[in-house]
Image 1: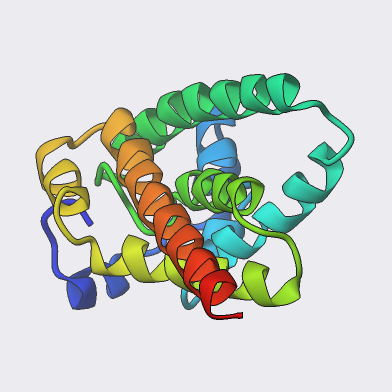
Image 2 (image 1 turned 180 degrees about the vertical axis):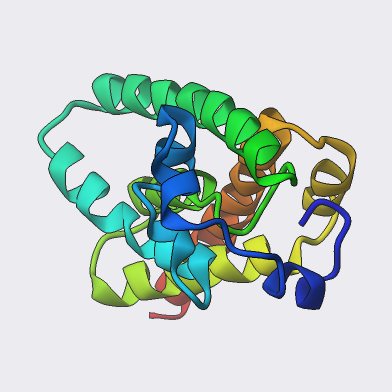
Length: 173
């Protein structure tokens, strides 16, 4: 949240559609304007990762890892440029980080609707709450890398939480 409180972030001026789509970086960072959704743009951006995960299913794990690495690097570039364009490093209209982070979570957690829903909630929880060390990255790295890394750490926290829950349920059952 770039050092701003959640309420301040919710009241950021929204870029207009033209400024969000006027450059390739802003188009990518806002996921083709999805980050302009009037409420909960990060949640909306996270949900948009479902088609990405679906279409990547036929790929082998090495190919998926390569795609996610490329998406991360493109996200760093796009978030950096869009942040400058919008006047804030991690503007709420930048949702490529949520799309990438949520997709990684879904790739790494058990399949099935219940686990996907739990994974979605876990990722959004850690991304919004930003416990340490996520908050340290969010406050300390005001650039595209920081934008992508804080969601990477939120994804890791969500994955570990879901694995722990899955293991606990398996032990009881």
